[in-house]
Image (cartoon, rainbow over all chains, first blue to last red; front, side, top):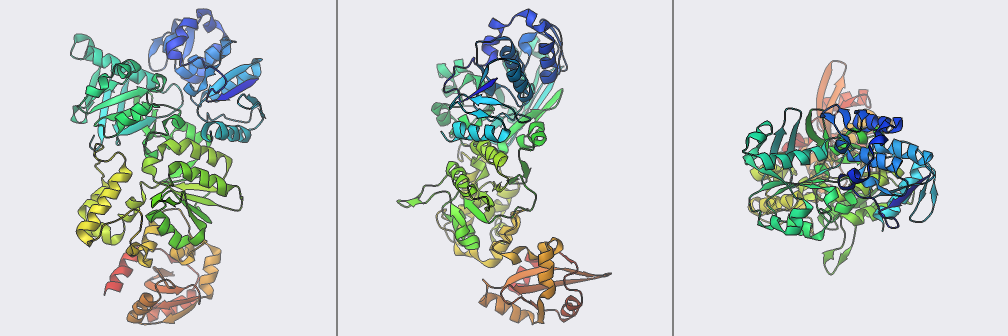
Length: 149
Length: 455
């Protein structure tokens, strides 16, 4: 289930992956087909191993050079006890966050802006505990907790 | 900072070409577009500049303005306070600098160009920046900035549409029945003259000072949207509305009966009044090619106000005051012209004839009304007299009347109360009577009419 905490009022977020990702990442994560697909969808890059990723612009790169959106999603997928700051994820992450929310028992994200999810989804708003099932309910919650507080 | 700066940073693998028109540019886009890479390249360029290792990184910019990262470390040390030469300062969202009050103070009257990389616009609400300065980085190997509203995310998600200064979700033209103005002074008075009590300001006056503002516009829109019969059009100064863009988007995502007209500022509109625009070169330059010094004008809104004040004082002998609009702008001919500049907005709820020549082409109701209208001949001089006497009742219309292969130019006055058109061309009366309601095309009527009136 996806848990959304707007503005991180009740959750401490993991922070920007630029500063912490490399301390937590494990090379074997990049053998997972789901991670490979994430990297393909977000960055358009092909993963051969953690240290050999074929990027369309930068040619051969390692995991540290992936985009922050991509690194955040990998952390969200692989680590269970952290809340990622999805404010550092672009709108491309929407589809994957919904997928990961459905896959994991609990996935908490902190959002400081209205990330544009591609379709309706189910989530819990941590700020007041309400359940949302549609995009409209998500926007209403975002409006209340980001802009009206 | 004065005017536009174009910077280009190239490596054998990629090129970044950024055109910065305003003192603050915000890059907000989806992931993996190269924002972090740009910052890394700038750091590398600065560290290797002038050495053999730096030969692969080429940098050029207008006036040779240098790029620099305003990192957390530099910020904490306070080194930036000594940077006197204009520079392009890049600030990444993960450094948490742009949301501080110290940063707001630093930006104010600073000679630098700021490029802030941030998706979280709500945290930048303290800063004053334009909706037109929110950009997205795009391109594969050659990267450049495009307006965020034209980015793939915005277009694919259908979150909002953007035509000129109009931000909307429904079909065009936008037909409001409620109007909100950010401005409680001149802007409000202008639209109140047209819309009466259907126009509300974002705030009232307290101790002679307006209490409205950009954030209050959105709250006022929310109030009006509670009634689903309302179609709300909000007028706000786009030059300072950037921080509110996200909230505006959420409103648009939740409601289809709201639109925003974000012109640069109300004074930008007034500068285009024919009398002001024609009489002053600086007014024309301000509209067509604004060159703004950010050390004097923090936002373009202030620049346009200053230009209008200067022009009116020099050329017309009065001092323009934001709190009270001069009566001249409320004259029918000026209002008609200024409203015609607000493209894709139909004010027919209050004032049908304003757009009559345009509407006649599209709107069946209007066509029918025109077909039933009586046409009377009257001499040009009498028309002019009638107009002067009944300025608020009669409306100018103009167009080319097309009949098979024949085209006739005509100008007429329309009296909406009596449903009568007064024409000053006998031949036209004849033709109109025989083909009324068929096809009437718009022409650049107003200038011709103005000329006729002067005669």
